[in-house]
Image 1 (cartoon, protein in one colour):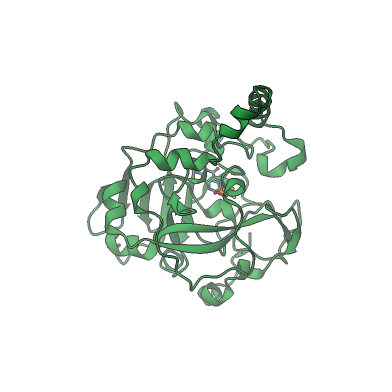
Image 2 (cartoon, helix red, strand yellow):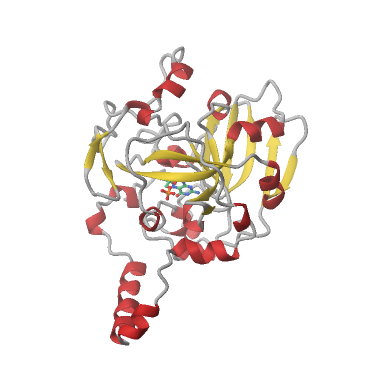
Length: 322
Ligand code: MTE
């Protein structure tokens, strides 16, 4: 039976003083004490920049921005979007970016299996060479009622579906994250149903907005944001955006996702954004922009209704916004 434990997204930010932040403050204090010359020599690099220098896919970026996808808010600064994350494999709080550096990105194999003409395995770098990379600016809205605006790079999920050649009986696309409790301390917490799993209907998977993310801010996507590839489906809550994917499985039956297994009443399969449908424990009417701290009204479908609303018109009796 599920024992309710408070997760990071249920704890107000002000209640969290993660160890990494605390240690960073102490380190910074030491450096500042060493004097102005050393301080001036400090590199002005975010946590992503060091990674970009060593990632074998770094030379692929930046890629051309697709100007079709626009958001009426400024981009969130890179430093903020890459240091405020949900990635439970590395901890149940927001400051996991240092712990996430343990993730080893090469070799990284991706399996495509289930109801497909022929199961396949790809090395990430071979896959990246085959895919038409572009940049898209999307709004990113978490079920916890915070949001940001980020420039993802990657390719449409439809391109991957076309490559996989699913059979007619495939109704869902299930995506799974890596599993390695040796590098991911969160996976030693056995009450979570690892590996992190999420799914979409095939209609959703081939919708033009569904995007496989491989880059962020013109560089390979950082580990804490789901390297080397993660999902972006901007009309849905962030927990659908499965990170560090190793498997795409085409299924006949609807999968039960990670959070749904833990708390079915609160985190459903559809998870489409709707300001009028509250989470059982908090309002979804507005969201906090993590860059400015300001609350802004939440839009239905996170503002992407023109692209997605028609997919759901004939679905009756489903909890589309939970
Ligand atoms: N994927 C995995 N594997 N593990 C996770 O804990 N958290 C989800 C999603 N994908 C999560 C995950 C949640 S709750 C959110 S809001 C987004 O990742 C956060 O993405 P970001 O850190 O890039 O903003």
